[in-house]
Length: 260
Image 1 (tube, rainbow, N blue to C red):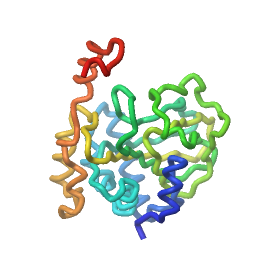
Image 2: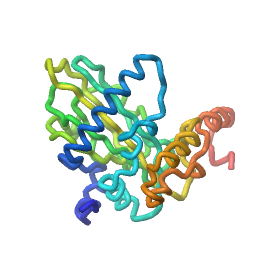
Image 3: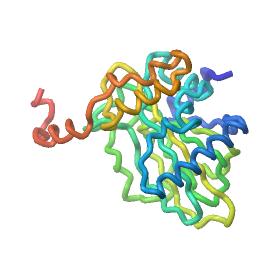
């Protein structure tokens, strides 16, 4: 069953995240790891590939076991795919200081839902990159770096996720403050990490400069699964974040309400 219970939805509303242990089946998990391995090789060559071109990473953006759960968090309203990132974290990997990933320049409200789906192909075992989360912070409006001064520290009320089975995913509200704590690591464990992100329809979201090309490739390669998930690749749901941010800087003086 790919859908959430009412308790799941209530927990997400209050806490800002949901954990699903071992959600991805073994065969898909292994194919995804092979794609990430190839991605690392390609990056070492200096290439900047579109992840939609990889045989497993592209279709992962419309994986039913993930997308159908996200749909429940969107109250069954339409939504669109924002991005997919993938990396391989090895022992000694640097961390990511406390931050959130809600795309809204400037940060003023939480009227629409944006989620990130963190995927841990080899799980977590406390050796490389613990995940830290601060429950409930998705309900507060703050800048992305509001907690940055705390770096990777445990904070009052924060939780550490460092023990997950292979193929586990965590769906987080994108406005949830979280961090990746650096760890020295063991000699064998690799932290295969993928994140995908989805945005509720109804407003325009800041997108990447090449979002049109990314979505074109996704549709050409059948990531929409015979049209069932074509709505995920709707470029009209985005605006050019970089150019509009520059325009905002020019008028961002005093109260923005007076600029209306």
